[in-house]
Image (cartoon, rainbow over all chains, first blue to last red; front, side, top):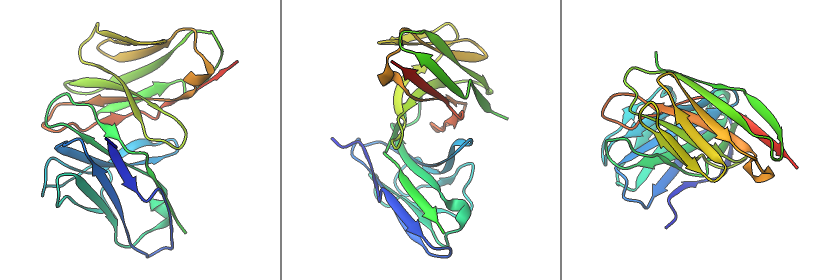
Length: 113
Length: 111
């Protein structure tokens, strides 16, 4: 039982390049989330999904797109990376609506040069 | 606007020296307050959830308490392995499990 798995763990991009971050969970959770963590800013929600085929914007969605084609996977895309997107990205998942605990992956450290 | 403020930003303790971390919050309709531990280079790890004022939860050397405006994470006789960043988050009303996080308290415990 791996929990929440993120790939890749590290990535360096040049400005304007695109990439996709993959999050996979094996806990049969309905809800999935993408956060970014920056020094002094705390974790901020980018996008989230309340079920397969659904996505919604969080606090800082600009410059990112997401897809949830399968219940266990949540993809975060950067179409044209910018230095401001240099950050550590975390994926999390939780059971359906309620007072539910979010379980986090180990993170992806992204640098945009 | 929903907000979470943690203090202090950083805390250095001698092994065995007890202390408390503070999390003050402003949220309309608190559904839950969460404490996470984060080690360097890793994702947040769940510690506690508190749902109503007066509630307390314990785990080894850690005890979390909740009032209507703030939560405390008490660390009794800490050990070096308790060194980490402790994150507080609140869950407001609505039909999702979205969390609003504070910026964390970085705890260092020296032998």
